[in-house]
Image 1 (cartoon, rainbow, N blue to C red):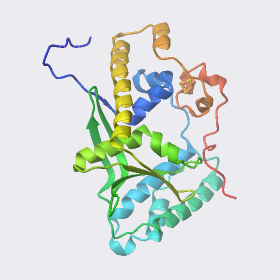
Image 2: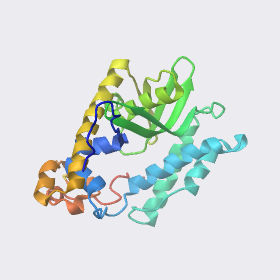
Image 3: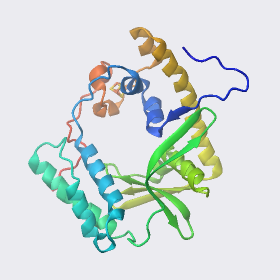
Image 4: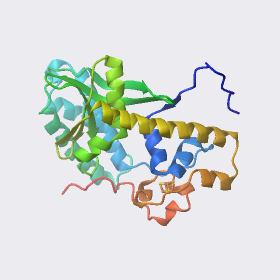
Length: 281
Ligand code: SF4
């Protein structure tokens, strides 16, 4: 049961990473199945593209801890090979070919990074409060650049090439920028997506107004989720739960990790665990 609110009593903030909010905004049913249902539904087989993403992120983060003489593109390639994950691939031949190609992508990317200029944040956790929420997230990298100030960098490893619109509309990037500014006590308005497979970098310069619009949207989602979480914890019949958390059946259901517990979503054919990686020629 929810606590009664008394005048002057501080309001409990809803703690959430942006992924929690965007999961709800994309599909309330996926949110319920992924975050609230206990026992949690089976999550299905691991995805190969998740293995690739995790290995790249780990290698790029650890690269900064290497001694200076090994902090080279080849050193980054060695890290990628050392932390490579094999789950989700079609077979050994595919995972080995993708590993070698990904190693080349990491080395090419690091050739353009100044190894003497250490970022001010590497996988740094930042947070910001709104009226109803404490929003937090882990930023891949925060640069402090001459002329640009603090810049949020987010690594992307998927098939789709990010666009400027992706950077502009990303709730996560906006939360990272606001959280970075709060933690480092300096303005942070520039956000960038760095796509390893193509080397493409897209950027967006937020204004105070555009950041506030993102945080306002996040705050409204958090307020709604606070109420829904409480109602779910208090007990809902299956019909009530389905009504409160409707299924949004779309092509992305093919990739949904909780589709085994979602009859409407299973109408969309499932993708193979390795479908998110492009086979090297
Ligand atoms: S399968 Fe589709 S409709 Fe069902 S929970 Fe997943 S995203 Fe939502």
